[in-house]
Length: 389
Ligand SMILES: O=C(O)CCC(=O)C(=O)O
Image (spheres, protein in one colour):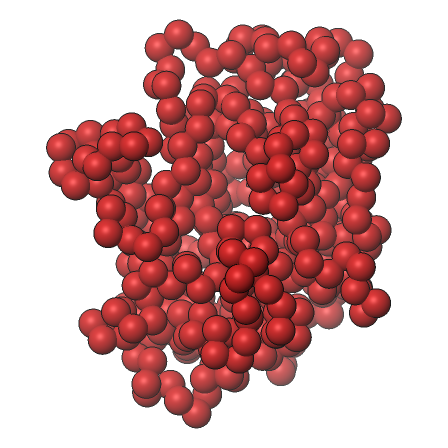
């Protein structure tokens, strides 16, 4: 990577795209050699095939191909377009670009995060428990770029009917049960929006913040995240991970970057290359990040995670949740109910599909059918009850 200018420099969008090209190409070669990708396959008991589990636990991630079909992807894309259209016209505005009240003005939690084009909002700050200690290169956007762009959208189960339905996807939930146990619980969800030529970066980090010093620490204790990809991903716009790092405990990220001559182009990282409808599962202890999207291709990743129940029970809030939050039985039950309502919302839409049988709600499914009452009781402002660790 000798041809890259100093990390602190600010190349133009076009220069950055050229400067990154060798690194992106070499990452693609490394990714293709790993072999941890393919369709979701299950054993006769409905558990992920052992070969897939072995590959997931070895590398810390897996790319599931062709999980969400074309029709559903098209519904999800429309939902995203709608959320983007209904975003406030500027970060503090009350109205969207069409003059309507912007989405989420009555929500308990703001559904949009805006950033300056091509910027890194977290790197080198103490935001989110300081888990992003170094800053990514921040190229200069073109002169006609907007001042702010949407970077993240929250509330997919509340704001997007198709978002709620995909949250109840039977194969995804069966995979979650295989990785975290049948009593698995939710974490949160966030939609990463990487618009062409303006999308920001996510500095290298490991997601988990709670259990690093736990005597019972192991490679699965902080759970994992799915990303449902709505468009093809490329090395220039996708998430990158360093294989195997979920096993290594807390990584000294500053030192890793320093050893790489201060550059964010970590030599062992690989890109998560996907087609629309592919879904990645990434262990939350993996070292991962993404670069400013100076390419011409959009990436929209519906990101939602799951935990082992015992990793969460008795813990305090972290990341976007207040430290005053206490993850007791009731809190876990209330947030997990979103899964059961999502399963039923999905079943009402895709009646031919066998719904997932979520063990914690097996005996009380009827109280969590999807309807106006459960929307208000369970789904409205559900993300104030996220279970971040
Ligand atoms: O998709 C991205 O660019 C970042 C995702 C990420 O950092 C996460 O899911 O924790």
